[in-house]
Image: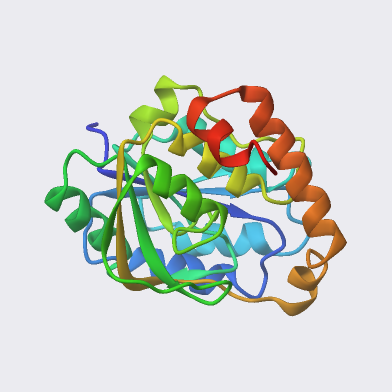
Length: 244
């Protein structure tokens, strides 16, 4: 079986209310050359049963089930480990995407085949809109820090070959800003990236869970993330974070 063009990794834990809309939105993409890897991180509700029912007739979908709850980073890593696509995307189990989500990424890569990253616009959390733009590496890193690009994993389409080549994974020892850490690590190997303002991702703002990360917990997690980046001693990252 030939490898698909896209792999989409969906971490899911106790998503009783939301997994249906998430997976249904992925089933209705305007392109067909993709696989979806759903990682059930040992849900204690009926998330697993809903997943099985939703995808039973769709061979583009596969499920990985953790026997204990390991967290979102481990779930994403499990999905990446079996992904086969040229391009890799992440969709959280409580969010949903537009039918053009994958097609928008593909069009951007086709227009700029030398690029190593494409970022889409999104609805919801910390959306910082801007015009279509080509980012060079240093500006990309600055905008992951604070800006249009953001530190999210879910508004980006990565080249899987770069991830494999540089053995990149989500850090399973942190449970906040883990996606920003991954974005910074990936950006260290990016020469150019494309930002496409089309809003194709819907981030579901869940007030109580997000509120817990505002204030002191955010700055504590950020200090830990910056420390980890400095330990890597990568040139571009060091320039951005030396004074933080």
